[in-house]
Structure formats: structure tokens, C-alpha cells
Image (tube, helix red, strand yellow):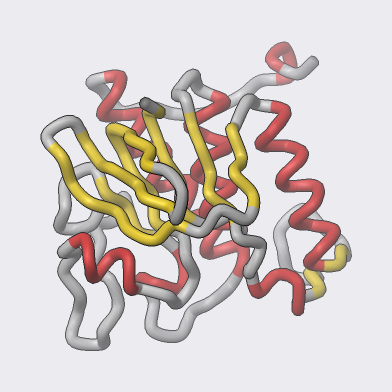
Length: 185
């Protein structure tokens, strides 16, 4: 059983996974590599002067793997269901369990809808400021929670917000992921 399963390996999903794994939670990401980032070139991502979207994804994947994220590449998730212990995430061949689930599937809201997450009048998944859905311990990020503001840096921020809320729940108090130079290797 993982602590956190992230469904989607774009900026939102990898950002959530980075924060949770970096801070000691067993994290698995299911990544079908269908992110819109492969069509992008980033000039407006804070801290990055210019980078091809596919190169950005490669660098991001390397970073999360360095922090111990288990990445399941090309194993599409077919269902997410709530259980007494958290969630069961199903693929064509297997089932996985986790206490928390982060949905980061771009504009595809089908898993959130099947899980029973509330939606807004605009048809997007309704979330709190911390990205938690109406289903406790289930989070939604990025394009699935916004009608039009689909942007890599916004999505990454959504993933970080979800992760920090999960980490706050796990620690029983507000959690701040703040590194200092002495933390760097």
C-alpha cells in the first residue's frame, strides 16, 4: 500500500509526487505520457528561461525519481474507488491501494466523476483551496478544476497545494516545505 497514488504524470501530478515523496510518503505515479507539455515550449515558467516541453518532462521525471517516486509508465488507470482504508486504483492488470489519491489527468474528469467528486456549474471538479475534492483525501488538480486556465505553472502549483495539504494531515499541523542551502546535496 502506497501512502499516495498520483494519477497523471504532467506538471501537476509530478509536482504533487515530488513534495510527498521528498517528505517521506511512499508515492506512486501512473503516467501515460499524454501530457500537453509535449506540444509546449516554456518561456513563461518561473525560473526557466526557455525549455522544450518534452525536455521539461524528462527533467521533471528524473527529479521525482531521484526523490524515490515509483513511476508506473504506460499503465493507464481504469478506475479509482473509495475504500475504508483509502482508495483502490485499478489498471487493466492490477489493483493498487493508497491512503490518498491525487487526480492529475488534465481536462479528463471521468475518474473524478466516477469517484463521486462534486462538480461546479461550469462542469469542473469542485475543490477546496488545498485542492481536496468533496471525497475526503481525494485531490484534483490542473485543468480538471479550471474551466479555462490551463497553464503548466498553475498546474504545478495545484499539485504542490494538494501535497502540502496531505503532508499537513499526516503531520497533524500545517506543513511547510521550505529548504535551506544546507539541505542541498
